[in-house]
Image: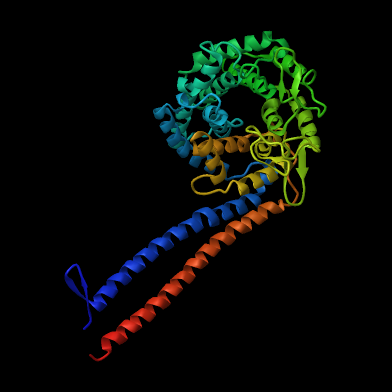
Length: 472
Protein backbone atom coordinates (compact mmCIF):
# COMPACT_ATOMS: atom_id res chain seq x y z
CA UNK A 1 0.00 0.00 0.00
CA UNK A 2 1.47 3.40 -0.96
CA UNK A 3 2.55 5.50 1.98
CA UNK A 4 3.36 9.16 2.62
CA UNK A 5 6.14 10.32 4.95
CA UNK A 6 5.64 13.55 6.97
CA UNK A 7 7.80 14.63 9.91
CA UNK A 8 9.20 11.15 10.18
CA UNK A 9 5.76 9.56 10.52
CA UNK A 10 4.56 7.05 7.98
CA UNK A 11 0.90 7.73 6.97
CA UNK A 12 -1.09 5.55 4.56
CA UNK A 13 -1.87 7.44 1.32
CA UNK A 14 -5.65 7.01 1.53
CA UNK A 15 -5.63 8.33 5.14
CA UNK A 16 -3.64 11.43 4.04
CA UNK A 17 -6.08 12.08 1.20
CA UNK A 18 -8.98 11.73 3.61
CA UNK A 19 -7.51 14.33 5.96
CA UNK A 20 -6.85 16.79 3.11
CA UNK A 21 -10.40 16.29 1.90
CA UNK A 22 -11.67 17.00 5.39
CA UNK A 23 -9.73 20.23 5.53
CA UNK A 24 -11.03 21.13 2.07
CA UNK A 25 -14.68 20.70 2.97
CA UNK A 26 -14.19 22.64 6.20
CA UNK A 27 -12.68 25.58 4.34
CA UNK A 28 -15.35 25.36 1.68
CA UNK A 29 -18.07 25.51 4.37
CA UNK A 30 -16.50 28.63 5.90
CA UNK A 31 -16.36 30.39 2.54
CA UNK A 32 -19.94 29.40 1.76
CA UNK A 33 -21.14 30.57 5.16
CA UNK A 34 -19.54 33.99 4.65
CA UNK A 35 -20.94 34.35 1.15
CA UNK A 36 -24.41 33.27 2.27
CA UNK A 37 -24.27 35.81 5.10
CA UNK A 38 -23.23 38.59 2.71
CA UNK A 39 -25.96 37.63 0.24
CA UNK A 40 -28.68 37.63 2.89
CA UNK A 41 -27.58 40.60 5.04
CA UNK A 42 -26.39 43.00 2.37
CA UNK A 43 -28.47 42.13 -0.68
CA UNK A 44 -31.61 40.07 -0.02
CA UNK A 45 -32.40 41.94 3.23
CA UNK A 46 -32.16 45.43 1.66
CA UNK A 47 -34.15 44.16 -1.32
CA UNK A 48 -36.96 43.03 0.99
CA UNK A 49 -36.85 46.29 2.99
CA UNK A 50 -36.96 48.56 -0.06
CA UNK A 51 -39.81 46.51 -1.54
CA UNK A 52 -41.80 46.73 1.71
CA UNK A 53 -41.30 50.50 1.90
CA UNK A 54 -42.20 51.00 -1.77
CA UNK A 55 -45.46 49.06 -1.28
CA UNK A 56 -46.32 50.42 2.19
CA UNK A 57 -49.86 51.90 2.06
CA UNK A 58 -49.27 53.77 5.34
CA UNK A 59 -46.36 55.64 3.78
CA UNK A 60 -48.57 56.82 0.94
CA UNK A 61 -51.32 58.15 3.21
CA UNK A 62 -49.33 59.47 6.18
CA UNK A 63 -45.86 60.02 4.77
CA UNK A 64 -44.39 57.66 7.37
CA UNK A 65 -43.50 54.01 6.94
CA UNK A 66 -44.68 51.52 9.54
CA UNK A 67 -41.12 50.18 9.78
CA UNK A 68 -39.80 53.39 11.33
CA UNK A 69 -40.30 52.55 15.00
CA UNK A 70 -38.45 49.25 14.65
CA UNK A 71 -35.60 50.97 12.84
CA UNK A 72 -35.32 53.49 15.65
CA UNK A 73 -35.18 50.82 18.37
CA UNK A 74 -32.38 49.07 16.49
CA UNK A 75 -30.56 52.38 15.99
CA UNK A 76 -30.81 53.10 19.73
CA UNK A 77 -28.56 50.14 20.52
CA UNK A 78 -25.97 51.31 18.01
CA UNK A 79 -26.16 54.86 19.31
CA UNK A 80 -25.74 53.67 22.91
CA UNK A 81 -22.52 51.81 22.04
CA UNK A 82 -21.14 54.77 20.12
CA UNK A 83 -22.00 57.30 22.85
CA UNK A 84 -20.33 55.19 25.52
CA UNK A 85 -17.13 55.03 23.49
CA UNK A 86 -17.32 58.73 22.59
CA UNK A 87 -17.69 59.82 26.20
CA UNK A 88 -14.97 57.51 27.48
CA UNK A 89 -12.46 58.60 24.83
CA UNK A 90 -13.08 62.39 25.17
CA UNK A 91 -12.90 62.45 21.38
CA UNK A 92 -14.43 65.93 21.25
CA UNK A 93 -11.30 67.45 22.77
CA UNK A 94 -9.08 65.97 20.07
CA UNK A 95 -10.93 67.15 16.96
CA UNK A 96 -9.72 70.29 15.18
CA UNK A 97 -12.16 73.20 15.22
CA UNK A 98 -11.75 73.33 11.43
CA UNK A 99 -13.15 69.81 11.02
CA UNK A 100 -16.81 70.71 10.43
CA UNK A 101 -18.21 67.18 10.42
CA UNK A 102 -16.01 65.92 13.24
CA UNK A 103 -17.03 68.80 15.54
CA UNK A 104 -20.69 69.32 14.66
CA UNK A 105 -21.98 65.80 13.99
CA UNK A 106 -21.69 64.36 17.53
CA UNK A 107 -23.85 67.04 19.17
CA UNK A 108 -26.06 67.54 16.10
CA UNK A 109 -26.62 63.80 15.68
CA UNK A 110 -27.32 63.36 19.40
CA UNK A 111 -29.88 66.17 19.39
CA UNK A 112 -31.57 64.74 16.29
CA UNK A 113 -31.65 61.32 17.97
CA UNK A 114 -33.49 62.85 20.94
CA UNK A 115 -35.88 64.74 18.68
CA UNK A 116 -36.69 61.54 16.79
CA UNK A 117 -37.31 59.72 20.07
CA UNK A 118 -39.50 62.57 21.30
CA UNK A 119 -41.64 62.47 18.17
CA UNK A 120 -41.98 58.69 18.14
CA UNK A 121 -42.76 58.21 21.81
CA UNK A 122 -44.68 61.35 22.79
CA UNK A 123 -46.46 62.23 19.55
CA UNK A 124 -50.02 63.49 19.69
CA UNK A 125 -51.94 62.77 22.86
CA UNK A 126 -50.45 59.33 23.38
CA UNK A 127 -47.34 58.24 25.21
CA UNK A 128 -45.75 54.90 24.49
CA UNK A 129 -43.21 53.66 27.06
CA UNK A 130 -39.68 53.36 25.73
CA UNK A 131 -37.90 50.03 25.94
CA UNK A 132 -34.71 49.70 27.97
CA UNK A 133 -32.45 50.12 24.93
CA UNK A 134 -34.07 53.41 23.98
CA UNK A 135 -34.05 54.68 27.58
CA UNK A 136 -30.32 53.98 27.89
CA UNK A 137 -29.58 55.65 24.54
CA UNK A 138 -31.68 58.70 25.45
CA UNK A 139 -29.72 59.18 28.67
CA UNK A 140 -26.42 58.80 26.83
CA UNK A 141 -27.51 61.36 24.22
CA UNK A 142 -28.13 63.94 26.94
CA UNK A 143 -24.70 63.16 28.42
CA UNK A 144 -23.01 63.68 25.03
CA UNK A 145 -24.75 67.05 24.63
CA UNK A 146 -23.88 68.12 28.17
CA UNK A 147 -20.25 66.96 28.07
CA UNK A 148 -17.94 70.01 27.89
CA UNK A 149 -15.60 67.99 25.65
CA UNK A 150 -18.32 67.91 22.99
CA UNK A 151 -18.20 71.70 22.79
CA UNK A 152 -14.43 72.05 22.76
CA UNK A 153 -14.41 73.42 19.21
CA UNK A 154 -16.80 76.30 19.93
CA UNK A 155 -14.92 77.15 23.09
CA UNK A 156 -11.80 77.54 20.98
CA UNK A 157 -13.67 79.70 18.45
CA UNK A 158 -15.53 81.96 20.91
CA UNK A 159 -13.38 81.91 24.03
CA UNK A 160 -14.30 81.37 27.66
CA UNK A 161 -17.68 83.13 27.31
CA UNK A 162 -18.88 80.78 24.55
CA UNK A 163 -22.06 80.06 26.51
CA UNK A 164 -23.06 83.67 27.03
CA UNK A 165 -22.76 85.37 23.63
CA UNK A 166 -23.95 84.46 20.15
CA UNK A 167 -22.70 80.92 19.28
CA UNK A 168 -26.24 80.25 18.04
CA UNK A 169 -25.78 76.78 16.53
CA UNK A 170 -24.24 75.19 19.60
CA UNK A 171 -26.49 76.87 22.17
CA UNK A 172 -29.57 76.04 20.08
CA UNK A 173 -28.62 72.35 20.15
CA UNK A 174 -28.14 72.47 23.92
CA UNK A 175 -31.60 73.93 24.45
CA UNK A 176 -33.34 71.78 21.83
CA UNK A 177 -31.70 68.58 23.07
CA UNK A 178 -32.41 69.13 26.76
CA UNK A 179 -36.02 70.16 26.06
CA UNK A 180 -36.56 66.87 24.17
CA UNK A 181 -34.86 64.96 26.98
CA UNK A 182 -37.21 66.43 29.58
CA UNK A 183 -40.20 65.48 27.48
CA UNK A 184 -38.95 61.90 27.35
CA UNK A 185 -37.82 61.35 30.95
CA UNK A 186 -38.63 62.62 34.46
CA UNK A 187 -34.95 63.56 34.89
CA UNK A 188 -34.50 67.33 35.48
CA UNK A 189 -30.76 67.48 36.10
CA UNK A 190 -30.24 69.73 33.05
CA UNK A 191 -33.29 71.93 33.60
CA UNK A 192 -31.66 74.90 35.33
CA UNK A 193 -28.86 75.06 32.76
CA UNK A 194 -31.38 74.85 29.91
CA UNK A 195 -33.50 77.61 31.43
CA UNK A 196 -30.52 79.93 31.82
CA UNK A 197 -29.52 79.35 28.22
CA UNK A 198 -33.10 79.90 27.07
CA UNK A 199 -33.40 83.24 28.85
CA UNK A 200 -29.94 84.42 27.82
CA UNK A 201 -30.27 83.52 24.13
CA UNK A 202 -33.83 84.82 23.89
CA UNK A 203 -32.79 88.17 25.34
CA UNK A 204 -29.78 88.38 23.03
CA UNK A 205 -31.80 87.61 19.90
CA UNK A 206 -34.55 90.02 20.91
CA UNK A 207 -32.04 92.87 21.30
CA UNK A 208 -29.89 92.00 18.26
CA UNK A 209 -30.23 93.99 15.03
CA UNK A 210 -32.64 92.09 12.81
CA UNK A 211 -32.88 89.41 15.55
CA UNK A 212 -29.79 87.74 14.12
CA UNK A 213 -26.66 86.47 15.87
CA UNK A 214 -23.67 84.54 14.56
CA UNK A 215 -23.16 80.79 14.63
CA UNK A 216 -19.41 81.28 14.43
CA UNK A 217 -17.54 84.58 14.46
CA UNK A 218 -18.56 86.39 11.28
CA UNK A 219 -20.89 83.59 10.11
CA UNK A 220 -24.66 83.91 10.42
CA UNK A 221 -27.05 81.33 9.02
CA UNK A 222 -30.73 82.34 9.30
CA UNK A 223 -31.94 78.72 9.35
CA UNK A 224 -29.96 78.16 12.56
CA UNK A 225 -31.50 81.28 14.08
CA UNK A 226 -34.96 79.95 13.17
CA UNK A 227 -34.09 76.62 14.80
CA UNK A 228 -32.87 78.53 17.85
CA UNK A 229 -36.18 80.35 18.23
CA UNK A 230 -38.03 77.05 17.82
CA UNK A 231 -35.79 75.61 20.55
CA UNK A 232 -36.61 78.58 22.80
CA UNK A 233 -40.31 78.00 22.23
CA UNK A 234 -39.99 74.28 23.03
CA UNK A 235 -38.02 74.91 26.20
CA UNK A 236 -40.35 77.74 27.17
CA UNK A 237 -43.36 75.41 27.18
CA UNK A 238 -41.75 73.43 29.99
CA UNK A 239 -41.75 76.60 32.15
CA UNK A 240 -44.87 78.27 30.78
CA UNK A 241 -42.82 80.90 28.93
CA UNK A 242 -43.63 82.15 25.42
CA UNK A 243 -41.50 84.06 22.93
CA UNK A 244 -44.20 85.44 20.66
CA UNK A 245 -42.62 88.87 20.16
CA UNK A 246 -39.31 87.33 19.10
CA UNK A 247 -41.10 84.96 16.71
CA UNK A 248 -43.00 87.81 15.07
CA UNK A 249 -39.84 89.89 14.76
CA UNK A 250 -37.74 87.14 13.23
CA UNK A 251 -40.44 86.02 10.80
CA UNK A 252 -40.82 89.63 9.68
CA UNK A 253 -37.10 89.79 8.91
CA UNK A 254 -37.08 86.44 7.09
CA UNK A 255 -40.07 87.49 5.00
CA UNK A 256 -38.71 90.97 4.49
CA UNK A 257 -35.06 91.97 4.41
CA UNK A 258 -33.82 88.37 4.06
CA UNK A 259 -36.38 87.25 1.50
CA UNK A 260 -34.67 86.08 -1.69
CA UNK A 261 -36.01 86.32 -5.27
CA UNK A 262 -37.11 82.69 -4.86
CA UNK A 263 -39.48 83.72 -2.01
CA UNK A 264 -37.40 81.83 0.56
CA UNK A 265 -35.11 83.07 3.35
CA UNK A 266 -31.44 83.56 2.55
CA UNK A 267 -29.06 80.77 3.51
CA UNK A 268 -26.40 83.17 4.85
CA UNK A 269 -26.61 86.78 6.01
CA UNK A 270 -24.75 89.49 7.88
CA UNK A 271 -26.04 89.64 11.43
CA UNK A 272 -24.83 93.25 11.73
CA UNK A 273 -26.32 94.75 8.56
CA UNK A 274 -29.07 92.24 7.72
CA UNK A 275 -27.77 91.96 4.17
CA UNK A 276 -28.00 88.72 2.18
CA UNK A 277 -24.65 86.99 1.66
CA UNK A 278 -25.95 83.85 -0.04
CA UNK A 279 -29.31 83.11 -1.61
CA UNK A 280 -31.63 80.22 -0.87
CA UNK A 281 -30.15 76.72 -0.99
CA UNK A 282 -31.72 73.29 -0.76
CA UNK A 283 -30.01 72.04 2.39
CA UNK A 284 -30.82 75.25 4.30
CA UNK A 285 -34.38 75.54 3.00
CA UNK A 286 -35.21 71.95 3.97
CA UNK A 287 -33.78 72.68 7.41
CA UNK A 288 -35.85 75.83 7.78
CA UNK A 289 -39.08 74.13 6.72
CA UNK A 290 -38.73 71.28 9.22
CA UNK A 291 -39.29 73.67 12.13
CA UNK A 292 -40.96 76.70 10.51
CA UNK A 293 -44.48 75.33 11.05
CA UNK A 294 -43.86 75.38 14.82
CA UNK A 295 -43.52 79.15 14.65
CA UNK A 296 -45.81 80.21 11.78
CA UNK A 297 -47.89 77.62 9.91
CA UNK A 298 -48.96 80.00 7.18
CA UNK A 299 -45.41 81.12 6.43
CA UNK A 300 -44.27 77.48 6.42
CA UNK A 301 -46.88 76.55 3.81
CA UNK A 302 -45.99 79.54 1.64
CA UNK A 303 -42.28 78.78 1.87
CA UNK A 304 -42.86 75.14 0.99
CA UNK A 305 -44.86 76.08 -2.08
CA UNK A 306 -42.03 78.38 -3.17
CA UNK A 307 -39.51 75.63 -2.42
CA UNK A 308 -41.39 73.21 -4.67
CA UNK A 309 -41.67 75.81 -7.47
CA UNK A 310 -37.97 76.56 -7.56
CA UNK A 311 -36.19 73.48 -6.17
CA UNK A 312 -38.35 70.38 -6.77
CA UNK A 313 -37.43 68.09 -9.66
CA UNK A 314 -39.67 65.13 -10.40
CA UNK A 315 -39.52 62.70 -13.28
CA UNK A 316 -40.27 59.10 -14.11
CA UNK A 317 -36.99 57.85 -12.71
CA UNK A 318 -36.25 60.03 -9.67
CA UNK A 319 -37.63 62.91 -7.60
CA UNK A 320 -35.94 65.22 -5.17
CA UNK A 321 -35.00 68.70 -4.04
CA UNK A 322 -32.18 70.51 -5.78
CA UNK A 323 -29.30 72.10 -3.91
CA UNK A 324 -29.48 75.21 -6.13
CA UNK A 325 -32.61 76.69 -7.72
CA UNK A 326 -33.75 75.28 -11.02
CA UNK A 327 -31.43 76.62 -13.70
CA UNK A 328 -28.56 76.96 -11.21
CA UNK A 329 -25.21 75.19 -11.06
CA UNK A 330 -25.93 71.44 -11.03
CA UNK A 331 -22.38 70.72 -9.88
CA UNK A 332 -22.36 72.94 -6.78
CA UNK A 333 -21.53 70.87 -3.71
CA UNK A 334 -20.00 71.50 -0.27
CA UNK A 335 -19.88 69.97 3.22
CA UNK A 336 -23.41 71.22 4.01
CA UNK A 337 -25.04 70.01 0.81
CA UNK A 338 -23.70 66.48 0.94
CA UNK A 339 -23.51 64.58 -2.32
CA UNK A 340 -25.17 66.34 -5.26
CA UNK A 341 -26.08 64.22 -8.30
CA UNK A 342 -27.66 65.80 -11.35
CA UNK A 343 -28.43 68.89 -9.29
CA UNK A 344 -30.36 66.91 -6.64
CA UNK A 345 -28.96 67.38 -3.14
CA UNK A 346 -28.70 64.45 -0.76
CA UNK A 347 -29.11 66.61 2.36
CA UNK A 348 -31.84 68.74 0.75
CA UNK A 349 -33.80 65.61 -0.19
CA UNK A 350 -33.18 63.73 3.07
CA UNK A 351 -34.34 66.66 5.23
CA UNK A 352 -36.94 67.40 2.58
CA UNK A 353 -38.81 64.33 3.86
CA UNK A 354 -39.45 66.06 7.17
CA UNK A 355 -40.03 69.44 5.51
CA UNK A 356 -42.81 67.92 3.39
CA UNK A 357 -44.37 65.94 6.22
CA UNK A 358 -44.82 68.86 8.62
CA UNK A 359 -46.93 70.71 6.04
CA UNK A 360 -48.92 67.61 5.09
CA UNK A 361 -47.31 67.14 1.66
CA UNK A 362 -47.12 63.35 1.76
CA UNK A 363 -47.07 63.37 -2.04
CA UNK A 364 -43.49 64.62 -1.72
CA UNK A 365 -42.51 62.88 1.52
CA UNK A 366 -43.44 59.37 0.33
CA UNK A 367 -41.31 59.18 -2.85
CA UNK A 368 -38.41 60.86 -1.05
CA UNK A 369 -38.63 58.22 1.71
CA UNK A 370 -38.72 55.38 -0.83
CA UNK A 371 -35.63 56.74 -2.54
CA UNK A 372 -33.79 57.47 0.70
CA UNK A 373 -34.33 53.92 1.95
CA UNK A 374 -33.30 52.41 -1.38
CA UNK A 375 -30.02 54.32 -1.77
CA UNK A 376 -29.12 54.11 1.95
CA UNK A 377 -28.42 50.36 1.49
CA UNK A 378 -30.41 49.08 4.50
CA UNK A 379 -28.92 46.16 6.42
CA UNK A 380 -29.51 44.41 9.77
CA UNK A 381 -26.73 46.66 11.10
CA UNK A 382 -28.32 49.91 9.98
CA UNK A 383 -28.18 51.74 6.64
CA UNK A 384 -24.72 51.20 5.17
CA UNK A 385 -24.22 54.46 3.25
CA UNK A 386 -25.16 56.84 6.13
CA UNK A 387 -23.16 54.56 8.41
CA UNK A 388 -20.02 54.84 6.32
CA UNK A 389 -20.43 58.62 6.05
CA UNK A 390 -20.91 58.96 9.82
CA UNK A 391 -17.94 56.73 10.59
CA UNK A 392 -15.67 58.49 8.12
CA UNK A 393 -16.66 62.02 9.06
CA UNK A 394 -17.11 61.78 12.81
CA UNK A 395 -16.32 58.26 13.98
CA UNK A 396 -19.98 57.40 14.53
CA UNK A 397 -21.79 54.85 12.34
CA UNK A 398 -25.10 55.88 13.94
CA UNK A 399 -24.88 59.66 13.38
CA UNK A 400 -25.96 59.76 9.73
CA UNK A 401 -28.66 57.23 10.56
CA UNK A 402 -29.96 59.46 13.39
CA UNK A 403 -30.35 62.39 11.00
CA UNK A 404 -32.35 60.29 8.54
CA UNK A 405 -34.59 58.87 11.29
CA UNK A 406 -35.18 62.39 12.61
CA UNK A 407 -36.41 63.59 9.23
CA UNK A 408 -38.59 60.51 8.68
CA UNK A 409 -40.18 60.84 12.14
CA UNK A 410 -41.56 64.39 11.62
CA UNK A 411 -45.36 64.59 11.71
CA UNK A 412 -47.95 66.92 10.29
CA UNK A 413 -49.72 68.94 13.02
CA UNK A 414 -53.04 67.77 11.54
CA UNK A 415 -54.25 64.48 10.14
CA UNK A 416 -55.16 66.15 6.85
CA UNK A 417 -52.60 65.95 4.09
CA UNK A 418 -52.12 65.26 0.42
CA UNK A 419 -51.49 61.51 -0.06
CA UNK A 420 -49.07 60.09 -2.58
CA UNK A 421 -50.97 58.57 -5.51
CA UNK A 422 -48.29 58.53 -8.16
CA UNK A 423 -46.11 55.63 -9.29
CA UNK A 424 -43.02 54.61 -7.37
CA UNK A 425 -39.94 56.29 -8.90
CA UNK A 426 -38.33 53.81 -11.27
CA UNK A 427 -34.97 54.27 -9.57
CA UNK A 428 -36.42 52.56 -6.48
CA UNK A 429 -37.42 49.48 -8.50
CA UNK A 430 -34.05 49.39 -10.27
CA UNK A 431 -32.18 49.44 -6.96
CA UNK A 432 -34.54 46.86 -5.46
CA UNK A 433 -34.03 44.50 -8.39
CA UNK A 434 -30.26 45.06 -8.20
CA UNK A 435 -30.26 44.04 -4.50
CA UNK A 436 -32.15 40.82 -5.22
CA UNK A 437 -30.08 40.06 -8.34
CA UNK A 438 -26.75 40.44 -6.51
CA UNK A 439 -27.93 38.31 -3.60
CA UNK A 440 -29.21 35.54 -5.86
CA UNK A 441 -26.06 35.62 -7.97
CA UNK A 442 -23.96 35.06 -4.86
CA UNK A 443 -26.15 32.17 -3.77
CA UNK A 444 -26.21 30.60 -7.23
CA UNK A 445 -22.45 31.03 -7.44
CA UNK A 446 -21.99 29.12 -4.20
CA UNK A 447 -24.35 26.36 -5.30
CA UNK A 448 -22.38 25.96 -8.51
CA UNK A 449 -19.14 26.05 -6.52
CA UNK A 450 -20.36 23.17 -4.35
CA UNK A 451 -21.36 21.22 -7.43
CA UNK A 452 -17.88 21.69 -8.93
CA UNK A 453 -16.29 20.76 -5.62
CA UNK A 454 -18.40 17.60 -5.39
CA UNK A 455 -17.53 16.54 -8.94
CA UNK A 456 -13.84 17.15 -8.31
CA UNK A 457 -13.79 15.08 -5.12
CA UNK A 458 -15.82 12.27 -6.60
CA UNK A 459 -13.26 12.12 -9.39
CA UNK A 460 -10.35 12.19 -6.91
CA UNK A 461 -11.99 9.50 -4.79
CA UNK A 462 -12.49 7.31 -7.85
CA UNK A 463 -8.84 7.72 -8.88
CA UNK A 464 -7.66 6.98 -5.33
CA UNK A 465 -9.85 3.89 -5.17
CA UNK A 466 -8.47 2.66 -8.50
CA UNK A 467 -4.92 3.24 -7.25
CA UNK A 468 -5.55 1.25 -4.08
CA UNK A 469 -7.07 -1.64 -6.04
CA UNK A 470 -4.27 -1.67 -8.67
CA UNK A 471 -1.88 -4.69 -8.30
CA UNK A 472 1.62 -4.20 -6.94
